Each structure stands twice: as C-alpha cells, then as structure tokens.
Image (cartoon, rainbow, N blue to C red; front, side, top):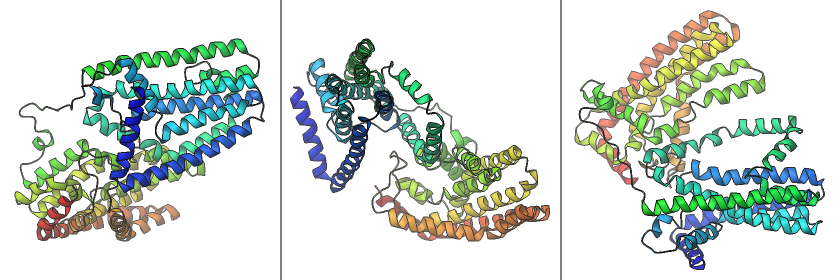
Length: 523
C-alpha cells in the first residue's frame, strides 16, 4: 500500500504537469534553483570536512536546526504545503492508519523540497568521511532527520486543518508569509552584522541546539568523531524520541481529521447590524463609501497590498540608523500618503463582477468616485497624521512640521484625485476575490506596469510645487517656505481632488458598460 501511495503521488504530479505548460516551466525553474542551492551546499560540506571537527559540528547543527524549523514554519505561514495526497481524500477508503502514515511520510519526500532536503542531509556525511563510524552515523541520522522534517510538516498541517477551513485564517496566513520578504534587506544586514559580532556566541548556540529536538540529530556524527560516545548516544535517543513523538501526535491529529472533515466556516451577522452601512448617510455616495470601507477591513487583497504600511517605520528607522541620518524617518508621512492614495487606482478592477451592482442600480460616476475616495481618505488621514507627527516628535524637528504636513496632505489629496481618474479609465487583471493578494494574473504584467509607472510619473509632476517648497524649507531652515508648502499643498491638493473626482465621474458615466465587460472577463 505504501508503494501505491508513492505511485499515486508521482502520477498526480505528472498529470498536473501535463495540464499546464506553466506548471512544467515552474517545476523546471524550481528544479534548477534547487539544484544550484544543492550544489553550493555539497561544496560547502566537502569544505567543512577539512575544518576542525568542532567548527564543522557547529555549522551542521545550526544549519540543520534551521532546516527542521523551516519545515515546521512553512505550513503555518504559507497557504498550504504540498497537499497532492490530501489526507481528507482518504476519508472514504479503509486504509490502515499505520500504512497511511508510512505512505504519506515517504511520499512527502517526493517533490523538490523533499528531494533537496534528502540529498543535502545525506551530503552531511561528506563532512565526516575521514571517520568511518561518523560516516555511518551521519547517513543514519540524515534519514531520521528527513523523516522528522516531513512528519513535523504533516503534523502542523493536520493540526491546522480545522483552521484552514476558515477563509480569514488562510487570508491572514498568506499575508503574514509576505512580511519576511518585505523585511529581507534589514534581516540579511542585521544577521550578517550579528554573525560578524557574535563569533563566540555561535558555538554556544550550537551546543544548546544540539540538546534540543531541532539539532540533536545533526550533532550525533560530530560527537562520534570527537570521541564523545555517551553524548552521541543520548542525542541519538533524543532524535528517535522526537521522531516517534511526532509520528504519534500526527497519528492522533490525522485520525481526528479523517473523522471530522474540514468544512468552510460561515460568518453570521445578527439582524439590524449593518456594519459601516449604518454609519454613513443613506445616499449613493454613502453606500459606496460604506462598501469600500468594508473592503478595506475585510478583503485581504486590500490588506495584502498595504501590508508594507505598518512595516514602513521599521524599514525607514533601520535605513536611518544605518546611514546615520535620523531625518530620513521624516519622509514616512509623504511616502505613506503616496502609497495609500494610489491604492484605489484599481478599485473597479478589484470589484470584478460585483461592479454590476453599481451599473444596475444607476449609481452616478460622481457618487461612485466620492464614495471610494472618502473611504480611502478615512483610512489614510489618521495614519498619515500619526506618521507625520511621530518622526517629528522623535527627532525633535518641529520646525519641519508645516512642510511635512503640506507635502503629505498635497500628495494624499492629489493622489486620490488622480486615482479616481485612473481607476475609471484603465482596468487590468487583478487577483480575484478569495485569491492570494500577491497573485499576478497572466496577461496583466505589461499593462499594469505601464499604468502604474505612468500614474507615478503624473502624480510626481502634480506635487512638484509643494515638493519644491518643502525641500527649500528643509534646506534653508526658513519657516516661511514650510508654511507656503502647507498652504500650496492643501489648496492644490483640494483642487486636484475635485477635478479628479469630476473627471473620473465623467469617465465612469461614459464607460460603465465597458468597465463592467472588462472586469467581468477576469474570471
């Protein structure tokens, strides 16, 4: 039966590649990427064989512990691990539990991550090739480590099965997965600096990890090579207990998942609870604003695209600390205003077929544009206010407040006006409702790039007056330029907002049927 499950896994993978050329291309690219990483790992392991055994053990334990931890965390932050052999599909089959666990464990190695982990783990034996006993121990421990990684991954997946039925859990986990990518630069820089300044700390950390379930299995060959056979035996026992406990817990969670299949959670609202619709006036513009504001708090595509907003202070603070320029943090307000104002430049495209409600009910273009701009403004204005006052307070640069406030307000109002025009004139494929906010639909790359870059350039040109005045205020220190920037930004921003809403409203009225046809094609 185990062999049949492995054959089934391979057959499903092969058939999925036949259905889509792009999946085959993705597999080839992923395979080449994995092969490149694997080659570097093998070369590094061979190089470690000529190093001091203590140093070699430190590196192997730390890297190995990170690999095991990665197999645990990936199912938590990603939308799901490889579920080609989803246990839920075996609910109606009388497969013995032990056989099912064995088959799913071995089949979990079939795939790019499993194969790369297996080969790299077996490659650790190259570090200890000079000691035959350590070499054999490394091969045995490598197999135990790989089985533990797969079992831990499946355990986490089974434990979160009930949560995966909740759309909110899937949306939140998908967004969280993107946070490390945004902070990749600061993370790498800080890690490199930390490693450089903590050379004495790493061996201590490795010794600690060697006695934990994450690193014990990787420390056994090193202890054997150094003659610490007692420690090696205890750590090998820890590795076996970890694998056995993981399989036992997985068995319990799997049995529960097979008896209680996943169901989609349904949110219920009590009668009379209208949410944002009860807070806005009963007008077309009020209804559109309430609907748009609901998107901001409930649609992960809006939250996903704006996940960088709460991370901007971290990024700018890190950049300012590295460059030694604390004033760099002061651009937080204008940059946030730019991002938030431009975020509704594709709001009609995000509506998809729900845009038919606007067309069928005869909502005017002016009411639609006012409602959407108001919803975005209600979210953006408090955030921008905090992001302007916060850095000024931290740096004690209150003399720059008028210029920063004028520049931020000008960018926000002008951007909302420009987005009101762009979203009514240009549409392109965006992630569908319920899809990952970071998905890039096919055929939308070039059009989206042209619209976005063109909009950025136009917005930059429209805010030149307040931008120049703000720069003069920063450069000369004269408050007059700062107050002029505040006045110009407020007045010009308000003018561009009104012009943009009216122009976008006219485009909306003239092209409503065409807009509905365009957004309905992305299905």
